[in-house]
Length: 137
Image 1: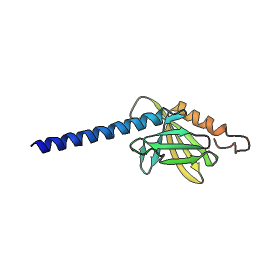
Image 2 (image 1 turned 90 degrees about the vertical axis):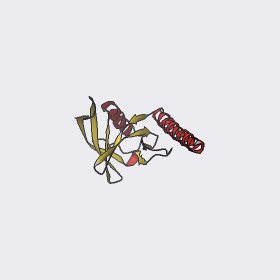
Image 3 (image 1 turned 180 degrees about the horizontal axis):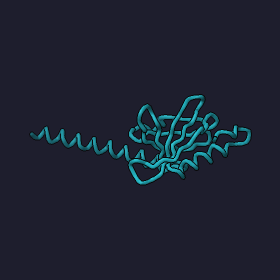
Image 4 (image 1 turned 60 degrees about the horizontal axis):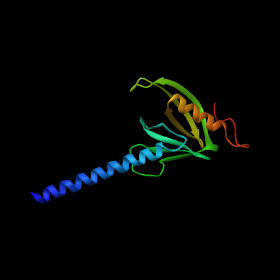
């Protein structure tokens, strides 16, 4: 009986440690300058994530992960917004912008709050001199 209690306590402590690491990871990513909530369409479902602007790329972190590395990285020079649609979020009373994009000739679909999407469009349009300027259609 005592061994079972010890095993249960150890398992509970390990689970608590995993939860704390998970929450620390989310907080550290979301606290970065230029971070915003952004869903990525994969197959037939939307994956929740956090996107962050860097100088040369937009990086996307999966919410449900313990990895410190981004799941996707899209180079600023290769990212083009083709079309945007404003919709009502079915899970809460808010608007969401769904955008069809291309990255290096590969289709990509993302969704974000209107203000976050406008920030993304401004980030693409404010590329350094000499870069392509027609990346937001």
